[in-house]
Image 1 (cartoon, rainbow, N blue to C red):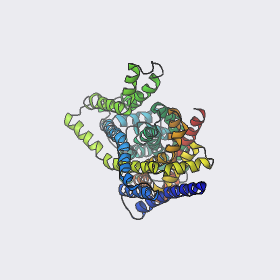
Image 2: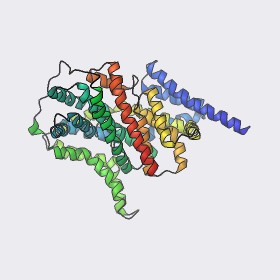
Image 3: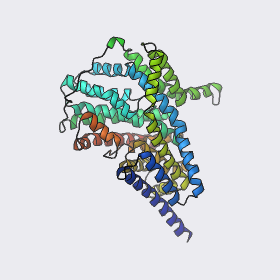
Length: 452
């Protein structure tokens, strides 16, 4: 009798998880509700239908929002200001231009992909696309190549950085929610992002450009750059990578100092994402902004402009955190996680499959990551994985969260808007590129998980 009741309870919780995601899809795509409102409604519904005590639902929602934004708000604000200053001073343009000169016209598509990967590190995905899309048209105009051959590598590089590399908001958030080691996140993320970008970007871009053609916009005008006022390539590259070095220093350094010593505490403090991004932001302001002619008023203006677009991103992500917390506290997450493990799916594969399913259904990569974390975290917590293994699983989740992008994903429309691609062309290029990138990254995460 108890077994039957338990089975019915598990079935109810699993159906609640499935129903919640379907409701989310309906509210966003058909009812046209804003994602923030839709996520809040679905969170309450999941709590009620899972049998969660009604007095606990609002407390759990508050805990989910605080637990997500308490970390992400600082990362997003500092990262946005850091990236905006790098752009305004020409540092990102310098990195892109130098890479194009180094690779030459024949391998320009590789240069564009690497430029996207590097320059997108301190930027949001959509901001990086807005700032770097001009590089695609400039190179296509100079080389006479099809826009697709250059656009796919750029978008692959930007998407790889956004999905797998710290200090990107999404991988940083997944790592923090899962308790993964940030140093291992950097290493595994690099191993996932670089081959993923090459396969999905230059290689796939060269292939698909033979079948899909997009012309340079008629109103395109080559940009006029004042190279003399730009920082050097070496200095620009060092600044872009600076927060990564600080975070990585903590992981590497702690292996060579005495545990629980004052030096280890300092390394952990300096290598924490909050401190690393704050130091990087200050270095960018004083070592780059003021040094290259920015006034105090201009720096203030740039920093203020940088954080304005972050509001909506934070709200939607925070609502995703609320949904995740409801899934965990209501028992929906443990039930679905146990069902997957009971079905024989390895945990790394389950992370990828779950994230991919949520991504296809509701569109947002960040929400897919948070939802998947909520579903698998109770199971993972019982298995006692270390920080490196959790980093590998986080990479699997990130990979699943970007596959099979279609019409419910803002990135789908962003690609079409900036390249001039039709919906059919976008499916053939952007959607396939995202799937190759996400699958490659997840496979790398699975391989690491097997050997860690």
